[in-house]
Image 1 (cartoon, rainbow, N blue to C red):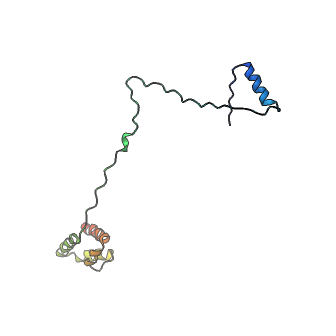
Image 2 (cartoon, helix red, strand yellow):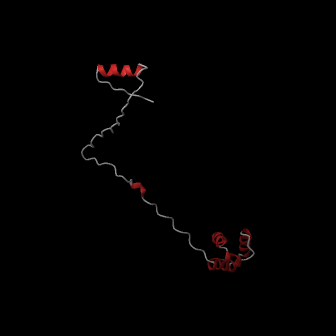
Image 3 (cartoon, rainbow, N blue to C red):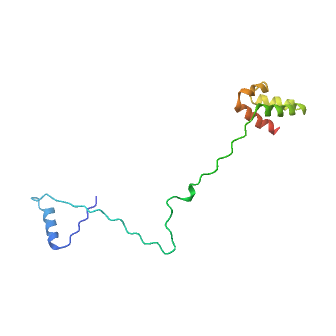
Amino acid sequence: MKVTVELTNEEEIKTFYARMFEPEKPNITMYATPASAPEQDPLPEGFMPAPDVTPFDEKKPEPEPAPVVTFEMVQKVAIKLVQEQRQPELRALLQKHGLQGLPELKDNPEKLAAFYKDVEVL
């Protein structure tokens, strides 16, 4: 704790000393004055105060949603692979995804999207 005492004349000093160091007079009254805010220097001519809101609060554009993969899209690519005589590659891809056949993809949109992503690479 820091205590600052401001005394302006000899009488105040004597009174202060007497109250602080004489045991018969333990009653001390203290008055606190609030500290004033420091004054700000005026802005130079041509300067403007900073805005309350920073310009960097702009929202970033949201990424485009992934295209929706349908069973028909997968079916078309699989037919194309069969027509190109690439059935072993198609079977290997089905096994990779733990599938016995394409119809299993109808009820599993997550596997459908993953399978389509892989089958497009072929």
